[in-house]
Image 1 (cartoon, rainbow, N blue to C red):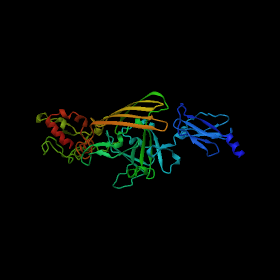
Image 2 (tube, helix red, strand yellow):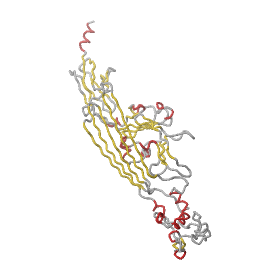
Image 3 (cartoon, rainbow, N blue to C red):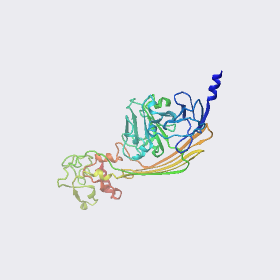
Image 4 (cartoon, rainbow, N blue to C red):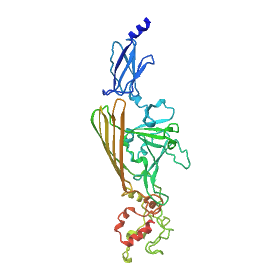
Length: 447
């Protein structure tokens, strides 16, 4: 009985507050007596209290993303601690299903994380393209280099011959289908992009790629091909006051590769048959292939630029090759992106507002895409145990003209393949001002 009273007299209460480097309270910090399993967790205000038995005991403070801190109790009854961030450890923390943060090494499945900063360094108009070279085992295919074109991503190869093989995108808990929205087909139509292309890279805090069915089980059958979990930026409650950030990016693009053309023979069905004006078919041979007379051999023919309704005014022009005629058609594509974001935080919570303007001029003349993105997110502390988070996102995308695809005369690339190798496309840019007779002849030149 006397021993029990003596032990009770030696125990005493130690309490305090755990804070981050900025002085804000840290909830969820494990406070453990070193060498024992006795410990507590700090509340939402960073407060903790526990009983110690002697002055030589050491308290260990642990929290993912911060360095472990040890403090000897001594004679102190109130111990306030400021934890130091651990950058290396933060890089190993990933956001998994439903926004849960876990250490990467503790997971039993393949996972990879990409920070938002990496997605804006070499900006892409489609966030899927920005993952190229960033995620191991990811196969990314862009439908074309035109404005607003869709992109497809497959993790660890295809698993179905007929179904969808793409992973599910989840933005702050909201699933997004990355299906392609277009009416394009073998004989025409346009590509209207995919679901994930409207995700704004300026609003992304981190992106976690969960590979395989085990990682994505909580999201159901739609996630059988994996999940890409995106966490958007929020206001930082640890940073009091108003913060403003501005980001501007301008990129330019030109065609990387082009078809290989022969430039030895011009338009026609044989080496002796090419007469636009005097041919048997009225305006001449309408064959839209280049099996005609040899180019750059000193020959001259009546071509569309020398045609006139008055036969006495028709002019023959040199029969020469135009090996770079397709290059003269394309223009330098320019994409401009501007983002401004404002954050404010304090004891009450935090808020972040962001606006992004993106304008893209395509390599194909007269093609464009314009996008406006508004984002508002915040969190409020209603009590020590209750916090409310919310976000609103609005995206408006407008395109006055998207390139036509498929086997159709409206597809410029199709025209390059079938038109004569003597045609100078630079002379066709002013086709609307040509006389009607020349327009009719031009139809035969191109098709």
